[in-house]
Length: 123
Image (cartoon, rainbow, N blue to C red):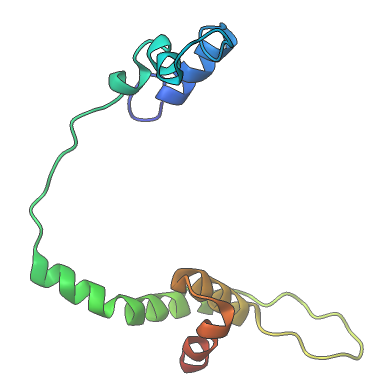
């Protein structure tokens, strides 16, 4: 509903289910269930704006994205404070900034942990 000032299609569908207008066993056709919901899908479809694409700039951004991501992420992580360490013996924990960088970069990469290890070593 944010930005449109009316309920989304999911709200209409939920209301139709609560009111018993959809999902009935005697509905002969699954497509009929959608039509029975009052044209929800068609009602919320809006005209999408289109924009011209600056292909040379787009290509440059795509080819430089990974290095920019690493630089920006490293700058962000530099501001992460270390929590106080518990006194006593034991292995020194990894820095929180390093953990934040590594986990975010891993998710950004969308590849497996084994394949990602090389990227992490290089970073």
